[in-house]
Length: 275
Length: 310
Image (tube, rainbow over all chains, first blue to last red; front, side, top):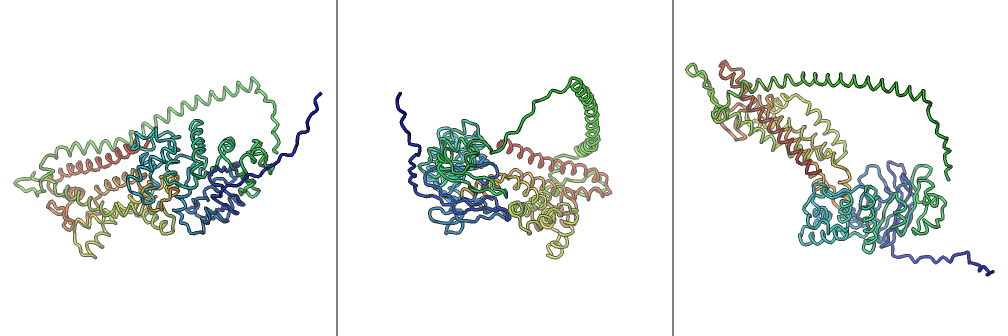
């Protein structure tokens, strides 16, 4: 009989060296007409990584995401408190206009929403035009490079003048990604970008996100835990509290959240026991 | 975490209750078929009742009006019949020119203001906007003779402009405004919010979102509303009756008195000459054709646009 070797039971945990920070959230809370929708969100979004926000319906994921490029500004009664810091500047109180912020922090929405009256080309360069760029050579270059980045150029280069509504749902969503990328943002916010798409289109968007990581920091809200596990590097888990306000339960690397979370509720959720 | 729900063994319904369910539902279905046939028949009857006056009107219009139409009718100025030539009524060219001129100036006055106000109402939620909306809705229901009275006292009398085309255009513009405002507001409100957000998220300023994203998406609805407002203005008698003066020349000048087709109908219908009274049907037919062409254009245009979109 061979003697069984004693295997060390305690793993040596070497804390990962944190990269540069893109966005810092400090005690971020959003309320509508005095009713808190999400609160206690404190975490750092690291540069050139994909950060996912997961949690059941009503946990405030989308509300939190929309606070990151001030989309709540026009909602009557909405109030964002705490601090959101983009490269050292507080985006609500700092020396940064809301339009400038939105060119640096782009957004892709749940349902593909290309501008229906514009062609594919016009959609791709719409952000640049909104910001006053009229020179054709610049627009042409931006259209091609952003459509290439969104893996759409090969299928649309011959029909750039066609209305964007002629594209399939997946292509429309990639056009929306191209539209956001044309402004060369530092951060790309994605609000369940694949929930309206079929599995093949979903896979293409996921591949796209991974390939974009080197150029842009991605923050994505997703209902799909497999998706979060597949594509994200860091993961924030939110849950609805007793007063129906969402709150951050845990933030860590995706690996830790899915394999070895600190909070038992995180484990219950990622194992699919509720949600 | 959460306890699993205990599921009971499913029990089958007994044969007798199954048969009862089938019997009752068969009876109910038979009853529904009878009710449905009666209702379809009633709908047909209602359709006939609604169609009879419409068809009769059109029949009478064409029957009595078509005979009046010839080249002179469109190109000659009106004449007063005499005992020697009791059928010399001339044409209605001054009324056609007058109607087109009136409508044109009214459109120039009403469309820009109406569209801007409509967009403002749809895109803001201020108290001022609410007040404006109530005013527009009240104006839409106001009797059209009121616009005529207003134009008479304000333009003709107070501003001392006199009986002119522009006074009539002003009255028609006031009449068109609420229609344009309300239809523009609806069209702009119908533009999905997701498009506004997409624009804002690309760093567009709110006014750019309105002009570059929202207006192009709402243009079908706006144009349809504008054309309906125009076709309503073309046929209005009351507002122009009191203020345009009834000119007897082909005048495009805004500060000259003009005639208009509804006014010509009104005047000729009171004539003592049977030939002039008969001419009324010809004018009415031309007027209806005008309105018909306008609203048909609006409908065709809107559905084309819709198809392109889809």
